[in-house]
Structure formats: structure tokens, C-alpha cells
Image (cartoon, rainbow, N blue to C red):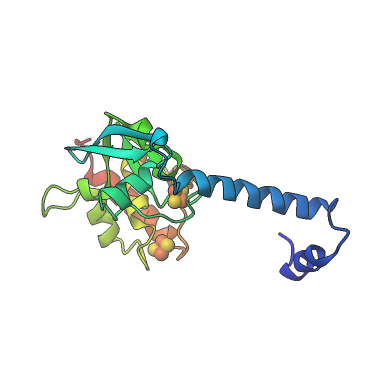
Amino acid sequence: MFPRTIVLNRLLSPSNLEDPLLQGQRATRMRRMEATEVATPQTTDLTHVMELTLNVNGSAHRCVLDTRTTLLDALREHLHLTGTKKGCNFGECGACTVHLDGQRVNACMVLAAQADGREVTTIEGLSQGETLHPMQQAFIDSDAFQCGFCTPGQVMSAVCCVREGHTQSDADIREWMSGNLCRCSSYPQIVEAVKAGASAMKGRR
Ligand code: FES
Ligand code: FES
């Protein structure tokens, strides 16, 4: 990590074209610009539109979407299921974790078209009516959040972490939950919650 002043000074220099630091920064910025364009297309060109069915939390939704719409944007912007959060939008933070055919995925890295006809579960579909899923309850009981922004993704990931058998030790949990970042650093409580949730989930999927 370079100090901000060094980067700014190099950016202002007219001879910076060969600067390896800035080339790296430009490449990162370019990748993010490209990813943003793909994730949130603004086009009205009908050649990019497709009809698909999203099976979300047990309900089928017939949608007409731009082919480049991500599953995350389809859930939040079209189906208004805003429990799934958009953090980085680049597959780095895990805030957008949902289940696709029972596997955890980052919804910002999956096209809605790839989920056509498959089963999607979001945090809204985890509870049974008013009864919370054991993992949701474990997060509450363990006080495993502060602002709560990362929590839906943490819970969705934790459920799969248990199903995958990755809760044998604290180190195991930390490793297999490492794709879910918490800016409030509630990690010790999250590990406790996953352990408690794993115990409570015994005997159920
Ligand atoms: Fe998808 Fe960060 S919003 S990984
Ligand atoms: Fe705030 Fe995790 S509780 S980001």
C-alpha cells in the first residue's frame, strides 16, 4: 500500500506514463470501470434483452432483463429483495452472498441469466414465517454484528459453511468464512455465532 501523497504526486507528474505503480493503479481502475459497466448497463437496446425465470425463495418470477444484469441487481432492483446487500460489487466482500441451487455464491459475480430456472435463496427466504433460521438466531444471540450491513451475507455463508462441514475448529470457520468481510470487525462474535448455529442446525439441512 502506498501513501496517498506519493500516488497523487506521481499522478501529477507529466512523465508518469511508465510509472509501474501508476500502471498498476490504472489497470485496477480500468478493470473496475469495465466491471461497473457490465454490472449496471444503461442500454435500452432490445438486442440485449432476454426473458427468464428466477425461482427465488420458492416463488417463480418471470422477468425481462438486460442480459448483462447481475443476479444481485435483479434481486434488489427488479424483485425488490433488498436484504441481499451490495458492498463492493466486485466479488471481494461477500455482502451479496445468496444460495444458488444450495451453493453459496456472490450474487454480484453471477449474471441473472445464469440463474435462469435455478433455485435462488436469499436472506428473506431463510426463516420459516416468523421463526428465524437457527443461524439467524445464533447471530442475534452471539451479538455477532454492529452496523449489520454484512450480516445477511455472513448468515447465508455460515449456513453453507455448516452444510459443507467446515466448522470443525475456530481456524476452520475463519478460513471458510474469510470471503465475508466485516468492516465493524465483529469476527470473534461471528465465529461464536457460526459454532452455535452449527450446533443448532444438527439434524437439519
Ligand atoms: Fe458482491 Fe461485495 S457486493 S462480493
Ligand atoms: Fe458492520 Fe459487519 S457488522 S460490517
